[in-house]
Structures are given as structure tokens and as C-alpha cells.
Image 1: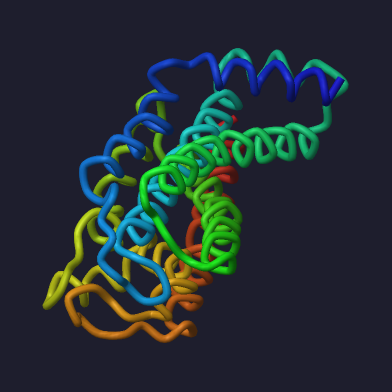
Image 2 (image 1 turned 60 degrees about the vertical axis):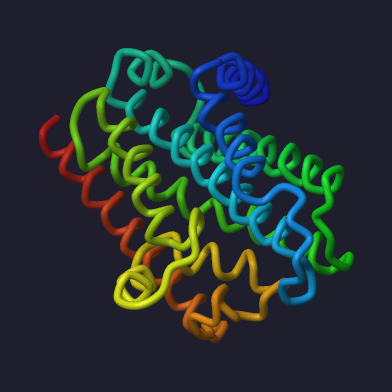
Length: 246
């Protein structure tokens, strides 16, 4: 039953044209606009690969946020109550949604990396493999984020709020355009900064564009760990609050 439900849910996610546009097509388009074919050297790769990793990260976190947020919303709607009447355990439901989110997240990563490989993004084998693995695995943090936001906020608009905040966090997280000065200092404390920095670390070793400084790996890891704890705590609090209302 679990495998059947997982397959049906995955098909439903992939058939959502609007959702897949923002998850897959938009990051690919942004890569075309900002970085495709830019062969200027950057670290052990080039600028095109640096932008490629950034856009893949944006697509991946959009995917995991959307799927996890929808799962949280389903639990409070009629469909969630319908699933509760089946033999499917709650833990299996969470595992299925997590697996679906990670599979969907792999779609924009694979597409953008394929476009990058065909249009001049260059780096050594370690750059390609390590950055792709970090982008994919790190996006799981934002499944927790999507779950937290949709448990804290009420209504169907919660998933839209979670996705909208991702765009703002992407700007502050140095994904779309290189930052410096006070904006960069503020951005270092935002959720996407550590994740994006780790994804690009195999290429840049922490050196920022435009000689804006250097991020040690411990700082990036601390950012990711801190926000993971915060998101998890918010998710638990939101779940307990909803159960108390019931």
C-alpha cells in the first residue's frame, strides 16, 4: 500500500504543471539569464558552474518546500482524515512524503546540471559530484521548513507563504546575485546562506564573488544546523498546537 500511495503521490506532483514550472522551469530559465556560457574562471571551475549550482539549489529547495508544505496542509484537510482511516501508519506517511519531496527535488538538479554540461559549465569530477550531492541532500532541511510554516500558519495559503519566503531568502542567501557590505552580513544569518555556501564550497572553497570575503566551512555548517533545529522546533510546536485545538 505504501509503495502504491508513493507512486500515485509522485505522479500527482509531477502532473502539477504550475508547481513544476516554479520548481523546474523557472530555475532553468534563471540559469540561462544569469550564468549560461560564462567561461570566466572561478575557483576550480567557472562562473557558469557557480551559477548552475546556485540555480539547482533554488529549484531543489522550492521542490522540497512545496511537497512538504502540501503534506502538512493535507493533514488538516479532508484528505488527511481520509488517509488516517487506512492502515497506512503516520510514520510511513511522513516517510513517503519525504521520499517524494527528494525525488521531485532531483528533477531540477538533473535538468540544470544537464543544461550546464551542454553549455560550457566546467569543473573537475569532484566539483560536479560533490556539489550535486550537497544540493540534493541539503534540500531536505527545507522539507522541514515547509512542514514548519504550514503547521504554524493556518489555511491553504500557508504553502504559498512558505514558497514566497523562499524567494526572499534566496536573495539574502546569495543565490541570485553577489552581495557585499551590510546586506551580506545580514544574509549570513538567513536560512539559505549556509546551504548555498556549502553547495558551492567544492568550487569556491568559501571565497565569495567580487572579493567580498571568505566563509569558513564551520560557519556554513553552523548556519545549516541552527536553522534545522529552529525549523524542527517550529514544526513540533505547530503540530502540538493543532492537536491541542482538536
